[in-house]
Amino acid sequence: MLELAKECKVLDIFTHVSTAYTNCNRGDGLIEEKIYDQGLDSEAKVAELMAMNPQQIADNEKQLIGSFPNTYTFTKNLAEKTLLKNKGNLTVCLFRPSIIAASHLEPFPGWTDSLAAAGGISMLTGIGLIHYIRAHGTNKFDITPVDFVTNGMIIATAYGTTRPKELIVYHSGTSSTNSITMVDYKHGIEREFRIMQFDNQVSSPIFLKFIASHKKFKATKMIKEKLPIYLLEKAAQLPWIGTP
Image (tube, rainbow, N blue to C red):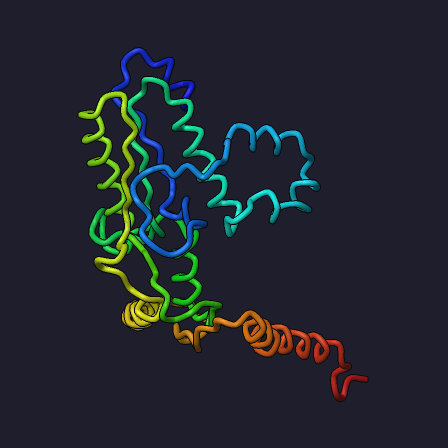
């Protein structure tokens, strides 16, 4: 896309949508609206990955991504650095939204076209399929309505046209000014889905609890999910009483 943009005869600005978590490997604290120099050559890293086969990449994933928690944030970081390195004389706007959720107002409250990330959690909780998740309930949950994000992209892009040949970075999220916790999110889901219930629900849309411990989460999953399925499978294999 960057190479295509460079070939355009009349182009005011190139806007790239990244993520607010592209620098999450820096730990707690303020993440500024800039690209951090972390001594990582994005093009060299891509060349290294391209020289490996898929199995080698899978076997060495933890070493390849380093301090990043997952491949998503790692590749987003690489993309930003590649953009900075190769933008040339282009005016570039780098937009970093946090977790994107259903709309607040536009085109109407609750609109979404994706069940990924927060949308998936909301839907599965709303139909009563999920009753526990692995998380600290007191953790901040930086979730932003999709119409806030799209409006922010338009404004940031328009402003960027006044900064020729620069690279400007904008964050779109609640941050520390209007944040909510996982518990707040849970209460919001419970409240809304009790008012607007689905025709076919598995059960009531309530989280049993947030489970921070990996061991406790696995144990709960075993007791609540795997054990009942195992017992039902065994029961289904038993001969019916009274069957000749």
